[in-house]
Amino acid sequence: MNLKERLVLLGILPRKGDFLSLKLVMDLDNKIGFKAEDFEKYKITQNEHGILWNEEGSKAVFKYDLLAKEIELISKSLEELNGKNELTFDHFSLYEKIVGGKK
Image (cartoon, rainbow, N blue to C red; front, side, top):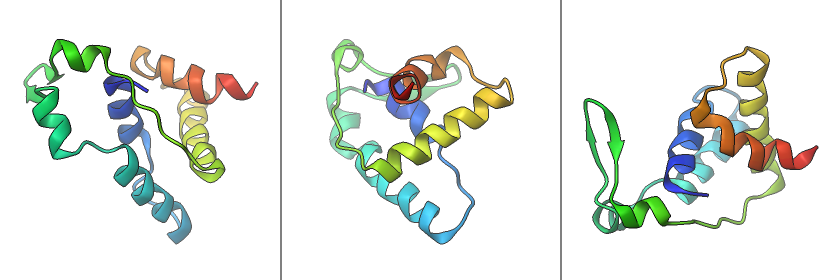
């Protein structure tokens, strides 16, 4: 996963739901969310145009061991966006990796 995919993923996770789903979201937030060292290393900033990072951040690849239930939750979120025709180009690579890989 790259920095952009991490941001996109964090933005599509549900913020309402049953206890178990919210527990999965919290675990994913902790696992994939940005840490202080990410902000320093990749010079992550935000302005009126969006979130920016340095060249090193553009090349960075992050690997996570996701549990089956976490993948299921992410897939469900992406498939819901797809079903409502609300996917954007920002979702595309994440959709291919998570949902496209299942088919």
